[in-house]
Image (tube, rainbow, N blue to C red; front, side, top):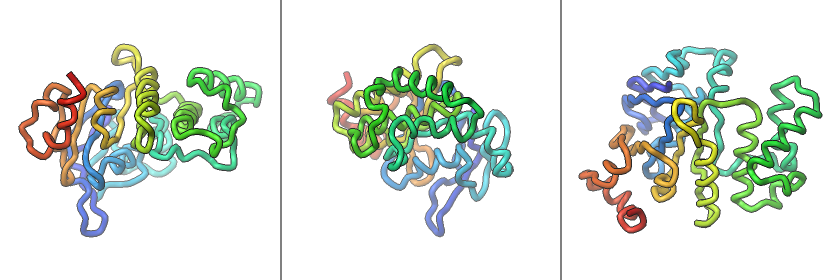
Length: 249
């Protein structure tokens, strides 16, 4: 379980999170919505311990990660895999090398086993044909798929974290990424691989998520399911999600 307990964070005089509290199970399918600069990506960085809050506690499986040393954080981080907005692939490495990187860095597996695991992942994500391509030879959608493969290669996460996974993609490619996210999160809770997806594209969020959180001025202005989201009486949130009434029955 993830638990934020009165978490606050500011950058200078700018308040990012203001005494934020929520709980989330690893198997949940959560979309974090909100405008630019509302702390969505910051939320993911706090979960991973890449940032520390100014005050409050962040508990992962009941352990307060805000007091852990960097070496102690590794065990907590292994519960998650993150896919960054731009994929963040290594430009100098081909697809195979990108996906193999974590296995080579963090395991003692022989190269034959690494190759077998990489090829299995690439086949699962329909990327075998691009195994020796360089990142610049890939479309935006393929780069995101390779980034997902790489995020899965280093560990067996309990939850995926997606930072603007469909931003900058054409509608068809974005829909394919949403389908992949759903495939990876298939199954029944609590066994399934859950996720938190940060996005400002509400139409993509509803293709994958069961729970929606809307951030505004450092607080959670909404936390609920799709039915409640569509019926919100909050004027700002209603404006944010108004396109749902035209594209989602």
